[in-house]
Length: 267
Image (cartoon, rainbow, N blue to C red):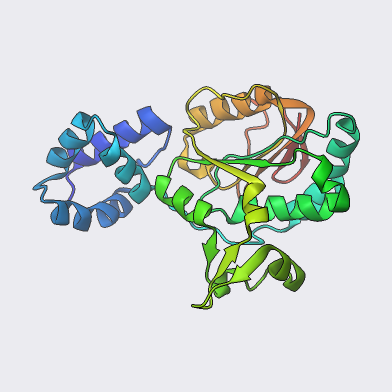
């Protein structure tokens, strides 16, 4: 069982490195790590953390983050966002970039890939035959290498796709022998997956038109959240949009964003 001091040590490590606040999640932390520590031969959480901090390869740290960041997501999640994206945001980008044909969309918590692939499918349907003339690839980032490996493979159980429209399923996925589905090469090419820690400086050369940062700020305390939201604001084109999770809120007194409707904000 994790001791209070060991728990605080891991909480502090995650907060400093990733901005993740697990100060109220002792039971979850213990539950997710206990068997892993036993199977790895560590006699205590402190002994494990000593090795994490000494490991020059970063592999142990990577595994720690994979265990402690949940990746629960699914296709069509909070679909109202995609309807707004298609009816309001994409026409705005299309008009704004009619000459450059350069669409810049970032999914900042891509998890196992359902969300960025959804965005790519909506963009594909919206642009239609004109899609080939646009650079409309989605940048999708996450700190979990495990989740990113799943996303890059693009394989999903039939159950995961049950709410996806039949024509999308037919067009964007191929069924495998075991009954699961894999994203087509064409769909995979529309998403660029990268490992990225949201606490690091944003590396974008050009400003984004839209940022999806849904259901990730639940891991952050208010100060970290404010700092992150400001960084997102600075990374957006004037008039650009931010989507957060439908249960998430921004501190209206500290953000320059305008509220468009709950969970959708505009620069």
